[in-house]
Image (cartoon, rainbow, N blue to C red):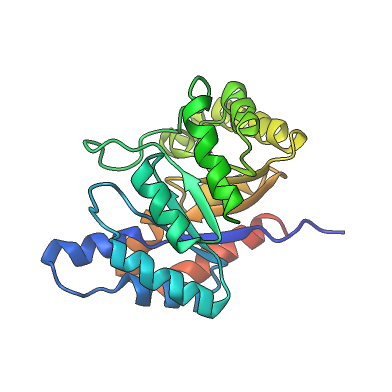
Length: 247
């Protein structure tokens, strides 16, 4: 029996970044989401930031409706704040991924610090789960963070792969071992394992070597590739790279 197909979630945030640079309606992140699903994406990811630098509240409303109509999952990335919790409870996406957020960062720079902050994060996880939202925590692949994610009741951990992706290829071994060990620990605790941040065709294929990984969430690289080859082609090539890595 072969390995279960690893899902591909496509993050469409940076389509909205381009749109917002001119303040108009083009390019549309909703159209990007529709294209992604047609090209083989298994779901859509969008991060509603506190400063609304890319995805907006109106985008989330439209994405929620579109994904429900298409019967495909929307993964809402969100900070652990009362405002974002209220928005998530209003829209009730398929999944919510709790992420760290700082206004001065260009992009998410690391994983959510769950260990030591269980009293703040646990109630948010509980409220989302009570509303039928699947909860993921975007964390570093470290034993204490995995254990804390389990302790607060998360169902999924998504490992921050930025460190791995930014290292030179000949220096990635120890970080890959760290990801592998964390994935095995999470699986032993009953947590589903996802991975994302900085992945391209090659590093996404590398993640397929970790047997516990069930989903990759990829955005910036695919949107960048779309400039040259089109979004549909970029996503189909990513799907092919993932599938070939486990064939």
